[in-house]
Amino acid sequence: MSTRMHWGLMIVGVLLTAPAIAAPTAAEYRQMGLQLRNQERYTDAIAALQKAVELEPNNVSGRVLLGWTQHKADQRVEAAATLTQAFYLNPFDVPTLNALGIVQLVEGQLGGAIASHGWAAVLKADNEIAYYNLSLAFERIGQYDWAIAAAQKAATLEPNNPHPLVAEAVAHWGNGEKEQAQRAYQRAQSLNGAYADPGYLAIDLPRAGFSETQLGTSQQIRKSL
Image 1 (cartoon, one colour):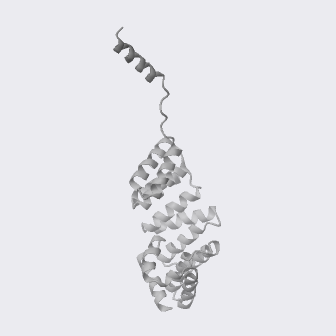
Image 2: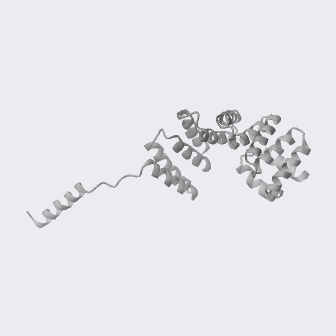
């Protein structure tokens, strides 16, 4: 046997007996996706999270993580589809309902948003996310009393967050209760003085789920103080 053939057989033997390099697990793909999302590398994050879902299709939290990342990347149709699939897997999972309701609210699917957040509030009574978004949705369909009640509940559950107070102010304003609207808005300003700045509002409130009309109402209330 030639020396060259001898070495070739040895190399093949090493390759056959060497342990295979383990592929990343679904949990590792989820961690990778979360890290990429924190870096705002959404395309890469979504690819990693989709791989995690492929490996563990029945993992609800993995689908929620993917759906929320798609939402942050403005892939709203895809986000709604992913979160709906998560809901079908477990219709009692509160994080799924919260995320799905937010996507529906932003997309203007107000009936769906109210259904998702309403069910989430039933399942978890101290769910401030659900009550806050219910307030925004109810205000948009003209149910001002319900919007006010939901905003007040959210503010009670999360007293250091000014968003529910602004939501309450907007609902009062729509209900013709201008003094109550001003008082609620002033409480929001006491938590965050930046709410006196119209430029800050224009950036902060849309990120918090306010529609353009609700943003405009907030600016009206601010000017009326």
